Length: 136
Image 1: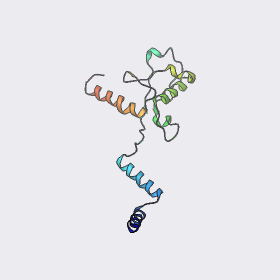
Image 2 (image 1 turned 90 degrees about the horizontal axis):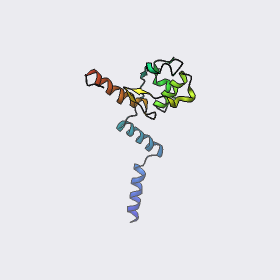
Image 3 (image 1 turned 30 degrees about the horizontal axis):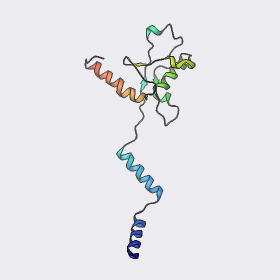
């Protein structure tokens, strides 16, 4: 029995990696299985609806807006809320950003959506539908 336990301990010691090495190995495997998403650096062209010209003074001076401009730090993806705040700042109504609704392809967009998702799902789908004559 003693020899069996000793043999098991020897096998565990021979095959075990330091904790840091295990972590690095698992991280490498994870990056292969599920690669990290590359940030999209799309540009957003802003247009104010003609019916809203009288209600919102100021101009959209930063047009088009790059998604990289909206990143507060390198790790978080910008959301529709970030874009809305940027627009409100440009229109000199920073404290009233919640009054603005943003439309993409004639759809009101939830402020918690990531702009990457809006670009890849809503906008691209709209482009495909309108280019193939599918309406939209």
